[in-house]
Every structure is written in structure tokens, then in C-alpha cells.
Length: 185
Ligand SMILES: Cc1cc2nc3c(=O)[nH]c(=O)nc-3n(C[C@H](O)[C@H](O)[C@H](O)COP(=O)(O)O)c2cc1C
Image 1 (cartoon, rainbow, N blue to C red):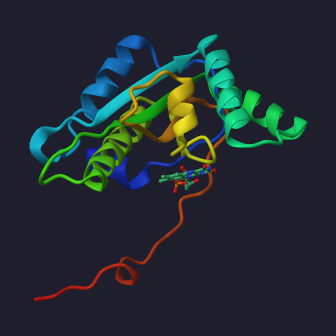
Image 2: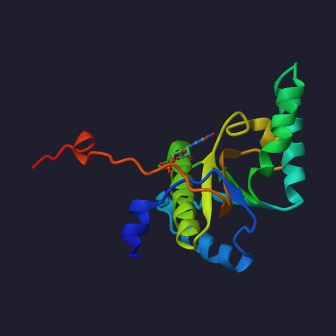
């Protein structure tokens, strides 16, 4: 399939099982991630790759953060947070390493990390695996940054859940380009 067709047909897959991409395959994926556009080459991208038993550590970080975040942690929410990382065999935590720069505000650095996340989704898709980008209460949450012992300037912009599709994703909607495009000539 051509690169263009790959991009045009990428689909998020929330139904994921083993196996996740191998470490060798993930090297290729990260090479694609690191080609995201990046104003002043600040390299604001960090990735935490969580696999297998490591997911228990992510569960614990979610629980620790939720305990600090709210006085009342219901059993239901506790269970939901504990189970969350087990929805896929691998999770990539998208961490922005935000730097002070006179010309590059934080928002541009977060956008660059978002662009690298899309490169990751496309690369994973092209290798025949599936992935979905999720956020929720555990994203943009300083307590999770704390619980994962990340540097203070870090911002978690989301989580990519990755694995082998166990079911198809939603069908890809037909969108009308004219609804989104204005041509000025
Ligand atoms: C920044 C961002 C955050 C998202 N957070 C969630 C989420 O928490 N839960 C969810 O089900 N989908 C979330 N999505 C949407 C899915 O990743 C996906 O894009 C959506 O299901 C549409 O599928 P498609 O990408 O195949 O069109 C998020 C997407 C983005 C870009």
C-alpha cells in the first residue's frame, strides 16, 4: 500500500490483544516519531513504553494520582483506573518535556508531541498492528507526572494503547473535503 493510502485509511482500534510490536519494530516506530516537525529543534518528546507486568506500575500511578486528586475515590473508579492499562498489551505514555524558549511557547511544543503521536499511530498501523489515542482524567494531570517520577516540567498529553487488533475498528466515515476547505486564489 502506498504511504498516502496508509494515511488515508488509518483507523483507531480500541480492541487490542497480544502481541504488541516487538522492540525491533518499535525502534522503527520511534524513528518515525522523531521526524515530527519541531520549532527550534527543542525535541520536546518523551515516551514511556509500558508493557506486560509494567502495566501494574501504571495502574498504581493512576491510583496514587487519583487519591491525591480527589477526596472520594469510589470502588468503581478505583477498579476502572486499575484495569485501564490492561486494555492493551502495550501503552505509550506521551510526555512533553516542555522547555523555556523565547520563540517557542508551550503550545507549540505540545503540538509537536501531538504530531509525533500521529507519526507513531501511522507507523504502528503500517506494521499491521492497531492503536488508539486516549486521554481522560489521567492526562494533563500533574499528580500522574508525580506518581511516575517524571521531571516537574513534564506534561502528559495522552496515552497510545497498542497491540494486535482483536476486532475491526469503526468504519471510516466519508467526509466531504469542501466542508473543511476554503480555497483562496
Ligand atoms: C487528543 C485525543 C484524545 C482522545 N481521547 C480519547 C479518549 O480518551 N477516549 C476515546 O475513546 N477516544 C479518544 N480519542 C479519539 C480516538 O483516539 C479516535 O481518534 C476516535 O475513536 C476516532 O477514530 P479514528 O481515529 O479511527 O477516526 C482521542 C483522540 C485525540 C486526538
